[in-house]
Image (cartoon, rainbow, N blue to C red):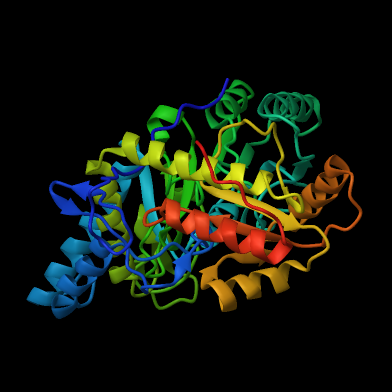
Length: 438
């Protein structure tokens, strides 16, 4: 059983925008900015800026001022915009009444904040298939489970690991499970609801890295019953340097402030340690906050919330099928995957070209075809290296390169973009491309 996911924005075939999409929000197009002639297939690294995000920033800039405690009109307007952004992002994420929404720089920053907020003695369980942001922040003694071969295998492995932890000498200690919602390497969707149910059955909490999931599918804390979620604005069409950690308040209110400084305090005395710290999000948002980043992110979240997500999801899945089928038809191209080939995924595909260095292929795509993709191990080195080894064994080849290429799609992607990538790869490999018939 897989987690049911609601998709993202409506696409109209009759759009006349430069990118060929019209994801309307109350009659206003939710399109993305870009450069004519340049094909961006690197959404999983940094998604392009949505026009609504740019418009929100432009509208606020004349009023830009200090946030909180300022008496002037600029400060009052900026404070209202900042706190309204917090509420709008919270609505987008389906937070519960007692959850906190803390603005951070990105998902990495959000997960590091959560790692600093863990109660003493907390044990963390994660998988070796995580992005480095969900591998590296956790304390010594973290249990890193092997990469599973199926969603069901992930659920069973977590159940066994938590059962073993509860039997141990520290069986009563707090436990946090940290998992991804969708792989940044393969796009494969993880069984979030089922993993959360297992965690709660063993009195553990679950933190969801939704950096890759949230741009494509609904992420609702209340519906999924997850305890924490982390997202990045730059993955979510708001590349202005804001991220979010949202979730249970108790650990966050009990933890030392993530940053010590102004805005996180209620009172500071003359003695060195005479400080009363704030509770709530302010406790972990010391210093002048990224007002424009928060407002841009909220603008996109609100636009996506009001959009018809089902049609966009169908459009993206059609593009994804077109891309994967086209890659499969190229004899020297091998796709990376963790689970079964027909498993649910978002618009991310990683692959290798046998006998060709991935960096050289990516450079050729950029220079000769004006197509932007990503090459390397995608900040998920343990997973990517394992998948490269498995891909070589599955394909029966010994000439696969040690790094991969990743193509990722989203708002603004079209069938023409996918076809141009396939044509370029066919040309580079000397293959004959069969027209797609899906």
